[in-house]
Length: 606
Image 1 (cartoon, one colour):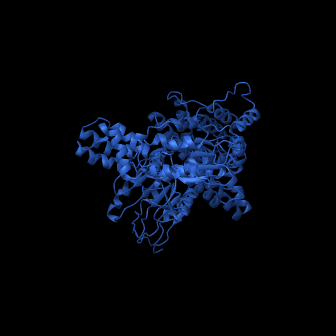
Image 2 (tube, helix red, strand yellow; image 1 turned 60 degrees about the vertical axis):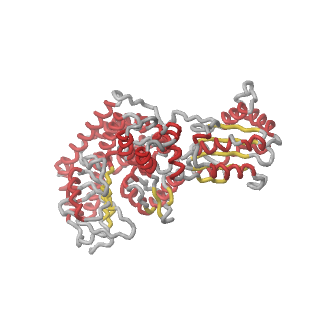
Image 3 (cartoon, helix red, strand yellow; image 1 turned 135 degrees about the vertical axis):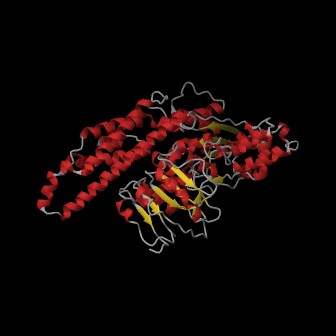
């Protein structure tokens, strides 16, 4: 099975195969006389599932049955991972025993291997998980899952055209960028590149369109070109596209990059040129050399030539050595004007004061994202029934699959495989909660998301992962504490959606999801120990892995941990009992938790 590890695997199968392929695991199977055919069957069935996983990850946003299938598959893999951990623990136990055993004891143990109670216990578990996985793989064709499909965007297109009457709150942004374009002292003799950065749905393309179509551009630049990059930043293709935008035919030498670039260079010689590259991703431009090869023809232009790049990822701005313009969310008043434009005839809510009250609450839930405001307003266009407005305002769509998810799902879709699971796990944090980088990295480590290897430690790898998620605007620095980070509410919704039933947050305001046998990660924020009885539902979550209290600043929460609860939660990997003031000693059941990797009992009487 070692050859499987090199394949492109889904993140929650990657670690699984690495464990199975280890020599210790294979040796254990042989020495304990476990059925070796189970390994081969497990390999085949998981590879069959892996073949459709990328497609399933993409389709889960729009197809309920695919989302359900994917959750069932993840649940089975979680169970399989627990079995592997049990085997790994048994391997370690046997190694320790061997160090202290006499030769006679080793002989007796070898004779009794076939009667090992661990084997009798673990083999039925493997067979059960295998049957579950096998059933799920057989279902993939019935729900339309295709092999070898996915991982590629359906293709996003944009144009330079924009309806200015639909834009609110971007005049200041527009003027700042226009000034950068018109200034003669931005970059000296170097090519000036301006990167507009922000999360999906924030209006980066719209702002670029406003600037591109500003009347001052016509008199200042000799040539303009707008190119939507999206999926494919191919130097040959991009050069050809720009030439066509400038009205130059490319048919005869269309595949000769040198001819194309020389022709473009001659066309731009001594001219001021404005180019907009919309929707550029880090996966498109991998290094500065690639960017330099593409941008060389622009350097023949006159001083003042400018390039605008819109992107969600700060690494793009670093590679192309640009001036960064970090786009912010809209102000409340501008959000309301935008909402009114799309929700009311003539954009005026004066005739409907009841609807305005509800509408302003809806706008608050959009958290300043223009796309969320616009699409929600469109849902209510010409609707005058108060009940319908209340239905939208109270809808579970805000906590589950909101209209903004189609815009944000591209950010998730293009995450590297190793980051997808790390990001989804962050749904354990409540909205508006600021977390520390070190805190999250410890959680990732306990869950086994960070690979062990050299030359970097797991902590250093976790730091790299964290920085990557920050650069993609999925994490943002806290405005209250520069040492902490948070997620925009709609990004939190995205994490919550892809995490699904596996994460549960016990909060003061209640939950739309329920604790169940699929729940693997739990966080809770309770001001009063009187609500501790809610933990009774945890008896359903026998596969729970994370038990995480959420502490607000300047609050110390006393926790009473039911002494009969922990023995039920044998799969826990992370337990945070910090500030449990009545916890004077660890329960005996801690010693029976084979999966535990992180235990925090700071600020307790222990």
